[in-house]
Image (tube, rainbow, N blue to C red; front, side, top):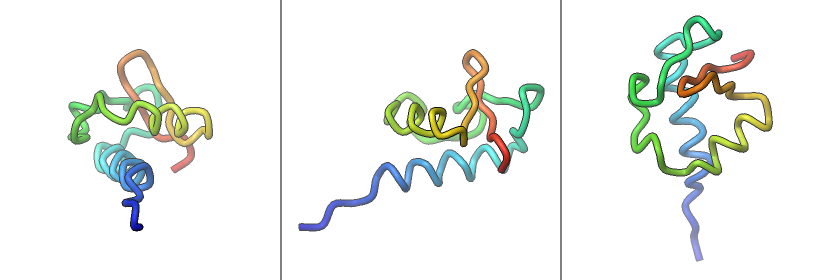
Length: 68
């Protein structure tokens, strides 16, 4: 049985969109909606893991990439 790697696809999509917006600091942080992240309120577990791993930083409703 094949299971699509949805969490990995989601993680790569978020990273790509935040890089395109140059969201690399609290000053340049953007909402997922503004970054163009598809279905920004889905897959909250992926967001949580990315934050826990230090890849993604949340500032209120906005996000930026840490060391990307």
